[in-house]
Length: 229
Image 1 (cartoon, helix red, strand yellow):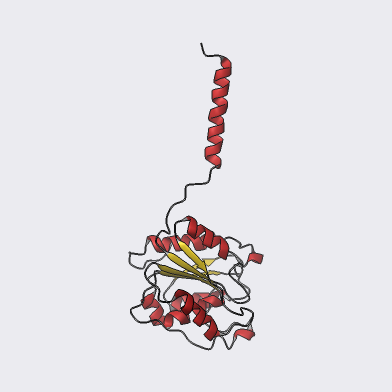
Image 2 (image 1 turned 90 degrees about the horizontal axis):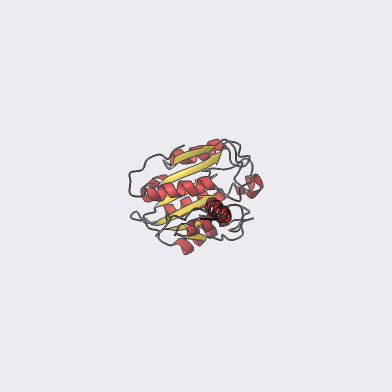
């Protein structure tokens, strides 16, 4: 005969295993395997700010490689030096290369891509709070914004394109990000709130960026279709 204490012990053991299973983190998927993602910061920021390090760790957990770039003198940026830094670090991308850029990093990436050969390829381009022209809130960047980019070249090179913006962004007007998305024929992903997606806005993590990047990679071999809003 099994003693009641044995039933009690078995019940406790089962409950413990059930709790452990519930608390255990989900198994990592290799959704980023074989890809390399460059993360580009913006004005008055660096690679350790905001959600950049978090994104790098999540990409690497998914089997991909991620590189947080450092652009020189981010408090007084020189467009030629920033573009050169991108060219030096990224070189010539391919279909397994992805770029995520924030704020002023977006226009810099667009100019860098505009200078690539016609037969160059990029797996995906994700711009967060990007803008195509001068910002009323930061007149100090007016000169930086004067040089154009080639929207047609961007559409040709980048297989997948998306722009994320918050409607309450106090730095980059929401309509400017929407205009940028229209210029490069990118999927536009508006958020009701989020500000400029800075750490002080509560963004030391950014799940929408991670999921959008996953969607790009999953659909890399498919025709360019809109992401779910």
